[in-house]
Image (tube, rainbow, N blue to C red; front, top):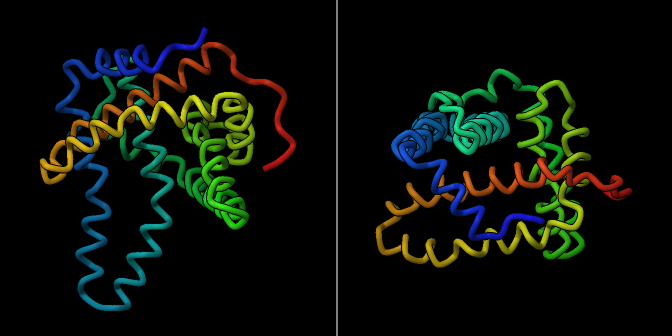
Length: 209
């Protein structure tokens, strides 16, 4: 039986106990490259173009590193905060996964908004899978994500919706509250992934991308 939304959030809070400072610190550490690039972009228009290109190139690496860090928190592995840069150890696959999921999601979104949302949910576990299996390729990570999320996309979508109330409460704090909410959501999502993985949520692969 799948874990309930309350159980997943409770697991996340337990994983974050004693790790809130590290989790919040990871947000600032992951933001450093974007901050530096933003400062360079202020210099000139050409620098701003370069900033946009570099930001696109490293987005996948930061996503992979951040997800690796939060998986470590969820699994109580006490990962160092510098794990958020772990994706730079696998730059090509991290970038290609980012590029492919972006392209596939946009292609579905061209049909209508809802197919695009469904596609995003379908590929949502790809980075977690790549983090656990760095030897596989981006397309294989996407394929496994499609398998894993078959029959679970709505459940994952609703799980994200359960945080809306907290997000609304964070708005009056001028965004400061999101420093706690962001890792809370991220670690809950990591537990969602582990819950599916441990139950072997891998039915036959869908034929569509």
